[in-house]
Image (tube, rainbow, N blue to C red; front, side):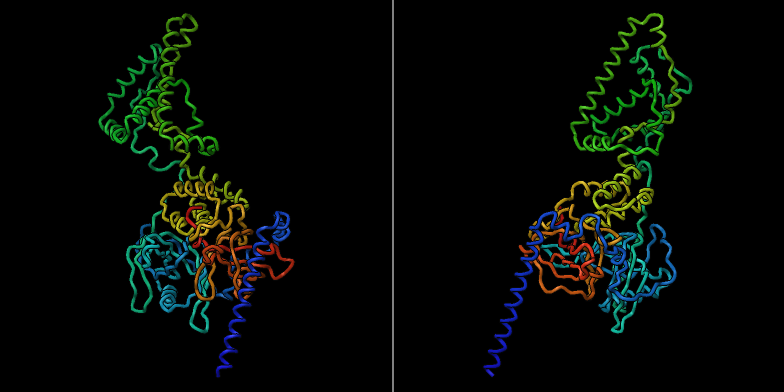
Length: 541
C-alpha cells in the first residue's frame, strides 16, 4: 500500500512539473510575441486591412447552438411607465439600448425569471437587466439604480433544463424596488426613463429670457452718439412690462457680478450693431468647426477667460465711443450722412437675450456633437460610414457607449447620463483621453487604445457567455503585454469560430485578464488576438 501511495505521489509531482514547464514555455511564447518587431507583428496578424475572419459570425453567437426566434416584437414602452419585470442582474456587464446580450441560463431562479418573461402578457419576452457590483471595502453585492429592458429575441431549451437566450437592449429604466416572487424568480418595479429628443440647442439654453420685444417697431435714427442712443434704449428697457422685468431679474439673480456685467455689455452692444449676421443664428445645417469647439472648451473651463473677455469687450465699447466722438467732431457733409445711417431694429425683436454667443450653444448641439463623435470613432476604430447614426444622435450615443473599450464602471456612468448632448460630450472626452489599458488590481499596462482590433460586426467590445453561465464583456486587441497563458488551447465553445482560446493571466497579480485566441486554420487572419475583460480594466485609462 505504501508503494502505491509513493507511486501516486510521484505521478502527481511529475504532472505538476509538466504543468509548470508548460506554463513557462507559454510565458516565453507570449514574451516573444510582445518583443517582436512591427514587421513580425504584421506578418503574425495578417497586416493592416488583411482581415479574413467573418466578423458577423461573432455577433451571431453560434456557440449557443440552434436557437428559435420569438415571434412578434414588442413595441417600445411608454415613457415614465411603471411596471413589474423579471430581473436579470449580472456582475461585470452593462447593457445599453440596441446592444446584444447572450445568456446561458443555468440557475433555477433565473430560469424561472426567463420562463415568466416568456409567459407574461402585458410585456411579453421582456426582462430587466441590472448591473451588480462589489466595493473593495464591502463584499456585499450592490445593485445599480439604472438598468435596461431587454427583449428576448431567440431562445432554446436544453435537455438538462437550462436555456440559451439571445436578448437585445431596448429602453433605460430606474429600479424602484425589487423582490423574489413565490417561484423564486427575481422581480423588480421599474420606471421607464423618458429620453430627450435630439435638438439643435438644449431646451434650457435660453431659460426664461424674454425676446427683445420692448424695442420699438419703427426704425431709430442714429443721429446721436452711441452712448446717447444707449441711454435712450436703456430708458426704453425700463418701460418693459412687469412680466418681462421679472423674467430678466430672475435670470440675472443667478449670475455672479462679473457674469452680470458681461451680460449687460453683450445686450447693450447688440443695440449699436449695424449689421446682424443672420446666417450664424438661423443656419442649423452648418456644424461647428473644430477650432471653435476647442476655444469654447477652454473658454468655459478657464475662469480667467471670462474676465479677459469682459475687459476686451469694455475696450471695444470705449473705442467705439471714442470713435463716435472723433467722428462727431469731424463729421461734415458725406461723413455726417454716413454716421447718420438708420438702423432697423425690427430684426432684433425676436432675438433672445442669450448670455453666451451662438457657438457656445452649438457645443451642446446634439447633431454637431454626433458628427464629431462619429468622426473620432471612425479614426480610432476604423468603422465604416456612420452617416445614418449621425442623423440619429440618440442611437449614436448608445452605440458608442456600448462599444467603447473602457471599464464597466465608466460604461455604467454613461448609462446613467440623462441627455443626449451630455452623453455625447462625455464620450468625446473619453475618446480624446483614453489611451492606456491597465490591470484593475496592479495597474500594470496591458495594452493601448491603438491596439484595438474589431473582430465582431458589433464593434471592438461585446458581451459573450461561457458554458457555466458567466457573461463577459471583452475588448479585442491585436497586441497585449504582461500576460501569461495557462492551460492548452481549447476549441470547444469558442466565441470566435475558427479560433482556439487560452486563458490569460496578469503576470504581476495573477488576475485573469481574458483570453488569447489563436487561429486553427493557417489561412485565417489575424493569426491571433487577445480578448480582455472590461471588468478587469482599471477605471483610470
